[in-house]
Structure formats: structure tokens, C-alpha cells
Length: 384
Image 1 (cartoon, helix red, strand yellow):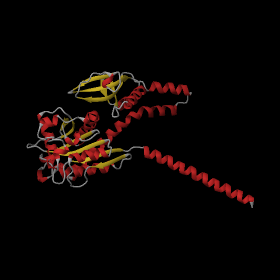
Image 2 (image 1 turned 45 degrees about the vertical axis):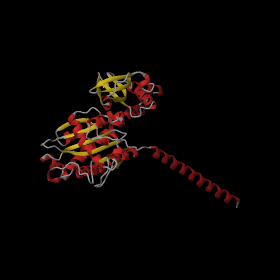
Image 3 (image 1 turned 90 degrees about the vertical axis):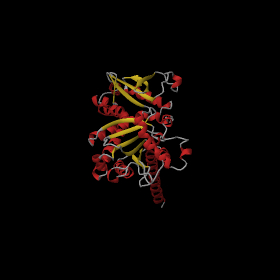
Image 4 (image 1 turned 180 degrees about the vertical axis):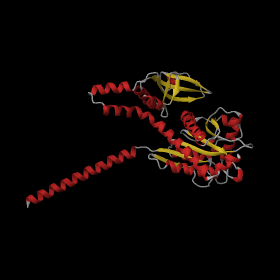
């Protein structure tokens, strides 16, 4: 009898231990999953509801075409693991510019993409992609003015935008450039999208441009506004208003967003390369370490951490850059870029990148130069 009771107690203990280990396994895996952040993309269909946007041939409305393209782009992106899509609107409703920015900020988004169509009183054609900028010429101001004028349809717009006047160049120039920290990543995404649209759809390349768009000003993440094409152009307008055309635009834009995300994650390639080398190295531990260090050093390559860019010319003193020394200022077009560190050792630049982020430059990123010319970081590893 005692023997049977002992066996029963042992079985009960085994089941209890199994349950404890099983629950621990679930808890640990849940923690890992919970800590893994999705890449959040906010898709914004321009205009909507009482605001039709531009109207082209056969009364095609910008609000309808932008929405159809956005929904298709979202459908493609939602099939990708690790990507979450948030929409500012999924139906024909009016959403003010302030609310669009609030949606993106509340979602803690990594990317904001606003999709529009263009118009002109001529047969102008082609695509162009915009990022926020404070230097405004007359032509760029007119484009921003057309998109910003929607705020006049909003209730209490004077209070929401603190007296901002979409018809005044001074108001546009006076926008506080909170987006400046994200400008380079915005330009990076805009360049990828613009190249994709012109090559995939054989469109006239009108370039990547900067202007004071309120909808971009409201967001705190890399943000772009795409003018897909001209509704007022006989050929391009018909293409934009067709299922085939909308499908091709959607495929191109979604593909380029994924390409941008892939480029962002390539900063981890160095670590992955080292792991692969360690797994195939049959030598001693010290030999593996030596191979590791050597594989991170690239001849004729300079790695730097881009910590800021903007129109202000700052002295590169540590007190201007949160205590960071060895900061370099480079003049680029109408602005400046600020780089921290300079090394051919990828492991070393990653340490510098972490240091920059610890100082508050959370959107900083690693860049590469070959013989003084900037190249994509991924090209360094492709060549090696």
C-alpha cells in the first residue's frame, strides 16, 4: 500500500514539474514575442469625403484613386511578417490633416506614406515624391498650398494650426521643422519610391522635392507624400483611373516600401556575417575571434554615424551635440549633415552608433563612403 502511494506521489510530482516547465516555456516565449516590435507603416489616402481633391478627365477624383491605391498597397504589405499597417482612412470620409498626423503619432509608426494625384492646366505628366522642407521656391509653394488648403474645410482650423495660413509663403517657411531629425530617412524612402515609379511604370521622373506640407509636418517619423501622376493628362489620367494602372502603382509603391525596410535592417548584416563565419570556422576560439575582427575592416571604406541634418549651420562643439566629440559638418545643397565618428571598422562604428543613440540621437544611422563618395551600406557587404 505504501509502495503504491509512493509511486502515485512520484507520478504527481512528475506531472507538476512538467506543468511548471511548460508554463515557464510559454511565459518566456510570450515575453520574447511581446518584446518584438512590429514595423508600423501608416498609409494615408489624400483628401476624402467633402474634399474631392483634384478632378481630372471623366470626372476622376483624386480622393477615390488615392484610396484605391492605398488599400491595395496595404493589402500587399499586410501579407509580410513583422509589418503592421495603419490607415488614416479606409472609406470615403473627410479626415483633417491634424488628425492624420495624430493617427500616425499615436500608432508610434515607423513610416508615414501619403498618396495623392496631381493636376495642371496643361498636359503635364510624371510622378514626384515630396518630403518636408523649409526652403520654398514659388513653384514648390504652389504645390504645398494646394494640398494644405484642405485645412480651410476643417472646424476650428485657426486653433488647431495656431493661425497657420496656407495661402501665405511666410507661414509655410515658418513651419517648425520637427521633422528635420527624420529628413534623411524621408529622402531615402522618397528616392527609392521615385526611382521605382519611373522605372516600373515608365513615368516621367519629376524628382524628389521639398515643400511645407502640413500633413508631413504633423508626423514624428520618416514621412513622404507621393504625387502618383496627373489626372489632367489624357493618357496618365486614364491610366490612374483604371484597375490595371492602380494595381501597377500599388505594386511599385509597396515593393519600394519593403525595399526601404530591408535597407534599414541591413545594419545587422555585420553581426550575421560574423556568426556565419564563426559557425564555419573549425579553428580555435582565438582564431575565430581574429577572423571576426578582420572581417569587419574594409579598405577604402569610411563608416560614419549620421546624427542630424538640417538648414542650421552649427559649430561642431560637443555642447552642441549632447556631449559628442569628433562631429563633422558637411554642406549638402541648401543644408548641412552632421556625422559622428569615422572608421573603416564596422564593429567600431556600431559601437559609436549605440553611443549616439544613448545620447538621444535615436534616429541616427550608419552611412558608408568609398573613396569619399557615399554608397549604400549594403553595397559594402555585397562587395565583400
